[in-house]
Image (cartoon, rainbow over all chains, first blue to last red; front, side, top):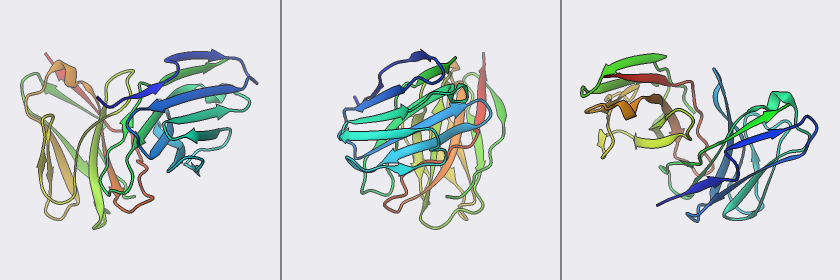
Amino acid sequence: DVKVTQSSRYLVKRTGEKVFLECVQDMDHENMFWYRQDPGLGLRLIYFSYDVKMKEKGDIPEGYSVSREKKERFSLILESASTNQTSMYLCASSTSGRGDNEQFFGPGTRLTVL
Amino acid sequence: DAKTTQPTSMDCAEGRAANLPCNHSTISGNEYVYWYRQIHSQGPQYIIHGLKNNETNEMASLIITEDRKSSTLILPHATLRDTAVYYCIVRGSNFGNEKLTFGTGTRLTIIP
């Protein structure tokens, strides 16, 4: 069974802290994605990666960075967390090279920044 | 990617077919129609996708109009576990265009 896992389901951090959200997939997928989801705004793409050490900005990259040192792992980093980064964060992965490939999502991490 | 329009919410009686419409009038020839759903507090789940022809799998059927400007997702025998937000997404097939653009979807409530 395909699987995308995220390091935490719930996380509480303080303003100014450096936050790491980890995502691991076991499907040997080339593509990995980070989204955030807020009420009334749907899912918005933060960053994505087509391959190891490659990254592309999504629609809302400000305040975030990412790291992809290994194919199976994609990390989202909040350098200095702020209260407006309180949100649900979703990781996804997909194969590459095909035109019609679905994304597999993790369970999400609900981050609260106080 | 083409924009999609979906009703904000719908109700359906348990055991009946749920028909969820989606308009994508600006879809281009190489763009696929995808459907995902999100059950409360979970990550989105892939349901089905198609290009031109109607598609069916174990979860649902996808009917795409001949001009491809709209589609309908059909859940043939809705159960309470089908209560979720359903997203219709149009996505290109070119390499480097794998990202999905989610709208706000249709909140489907299955009524016992």
